[in-house]
Image: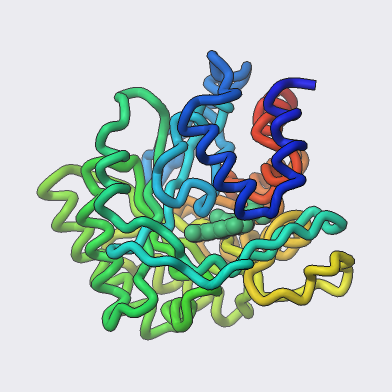
Length: 336
Ligand SMILES: Cc1cc2nc3c(=O)[nH]c(=O)nc-3n(C[C@H](O)[C@H](O)[C@H](O)COP(=O)(O)O)c2cc1C
């Protein structure tokens, strides 16, 4: 058993949020991080056609693990092709009361209602801007403060702050844990958001250079909503791709864990099938006009292939790390 796997099994016996904090602290210090990226980490290169994003391999760390941009170097060291930091909001905020993170061991799933707990843009940007060149691709996932009176203005504040330091930006409108946020997926709200953020993106690109922007959507969408979101995304003045998907509010009947009734977003294995179905539906609407990144339930090389077959050019994972530890990435890369 490798040191990192041993550490993973120790950490799994801790209360989930304590375990997460301990992991981030260890990663910040580089503990257990391999001296070299594992085989395959830089030999499965992909270039996303619309955004032009060049990735050393198509497996990314999804947002929410490194909310404050503290551990991206370590996570790249484990072999991820890209790491998405955030969600970061303009102002620091505490998030929801604890407990707010639950492991569903029997289901290989997680429920979280974190509520965008994060330290705000200032420190996030400091750490991102201190990044060493060539360290790997790092995205910045931006969101809105819970008490904000103008959610769209918060996204624009985020875009402006991270533009010069990130490799791409994600507009996260799909967290189920900030009241009203998912309403931004509605047709006219989305057109307003993509219009205003798009104009901001165009201005930032002409001032500081091109940067791809992605929109992250929920899996809980009916066909007509998928069609509306796809149409708005295609018509947006400055948007290069979609990340499909965030966590789900659904509770499949197959869930067995005692925590299945907790409020929040469900992720991990039970999300694989529904999120891949929504990804394929978006692919049908979008064709080749936007890049698609698939997230939700990825835990094996077969899951990676399934997302790529459904139309994604790259994938992201998070929950599988809770059960498998970061050594999972080397194992997937070895089979890719
Ligand atoms: C504890 C936790 C926190 C998360 N926080 C965020 C977040 O801040 N922003 C975001 O866009 N997605 C967040 N997510 C969603 C993940 O990025 C991902 O979209 C989702 O978990 C599906 O992937 P998975 O099944 O591999 O975990 C979070 C997920 C978990 C489990």
